[in-house]
Length: 129
Image (cartoon, rainbow, N blue to C red; front, side, top):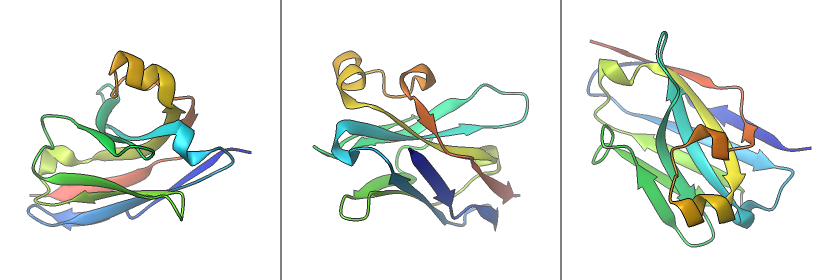
């Protein structure tokens, strides 16, 4: 059974930091891209950052470049999202997702949710001004 379990969300003031974790199980970690997506009320789900753990390829949305860092611990099948200098507009439910590496690498469509078959339950991040 595939499982993606997020943790690390919470309430933080603007300018603060949080680290999200995504623990994966039930599939071959190296064969998948792990992505972080977020969805704010009334908005579409957007790709924030993704990583191909087998070769280290990463993607960042323009809105988080220079502030967020994605990394993976392949020994633990866990992906992290370090979020620094958080802004109120970063407030959303953050989801971890896994998609087959082949189609994502071939199309370079890292932030497309439709390419990710497995999703976690989400963790709330709230940034106060």
